[in-house]
Image 1 (cartoon, rainbow, N blue to C red):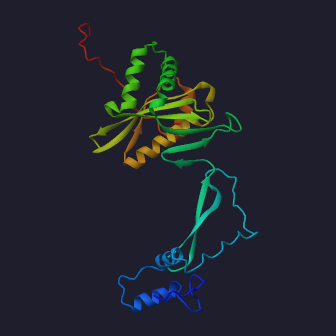
Image 2: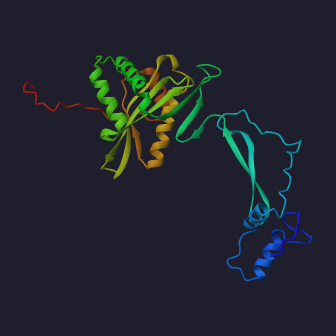
Image 3: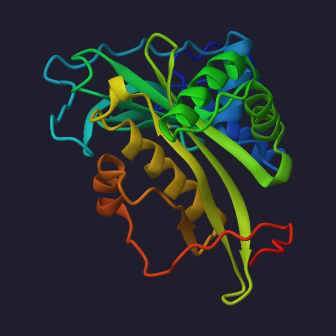
Length: 271
């Protein structure tokens, strides 16, 4: 290949060896498979045989596009560009939704009622959450008037964090890193429908953050997990007089007519 000093990257009408001229010469020499034009361009650039075209400044009339309505795309930015094989350039765009930003399984939500600048994240439990999770779970047990039993809290924490008995957990974390909500879940088989279901064992939000959408956000993430796994139902129970929670539940689920029974594994000789 002659080493002439073509200074335009594509050799569009000038003499010498640019990308298209180089492609033609390689094809004429019987090179197979023929490299892409972007590959030829990079080789010529490294050899100093072409100049990289100057980057164009963003046109003054370009503007960031925003929409204020929730659950709609409200921001789109050009984050870079790259050369395609045919010599054209493409731009990479990124968009942000005003209600949810999902990255690495984390879902960021704005809780406008809790504070104008406060955000919370829904994510899986992590080992570093252990102490805060235990404190939150003790609050959950106290809410249901269960005895303060640290050994039982520690055992349940081990189950959730280690994935024992098919358990796994989600937490809601505010913008200061404090845990403000939790959900403990497990999969179960449904023989009558030959499908799997997702059981929500525990759902709890700190009283000081209720009404901010934390509970709904946890339920929303639970729904996404169930949908991704192909589950046929998400099921949970709650106290009949738990009016605050049931107002949330009634918006996203249907109360069933089934009655729950608990039977002791020990025989009651007095029955």
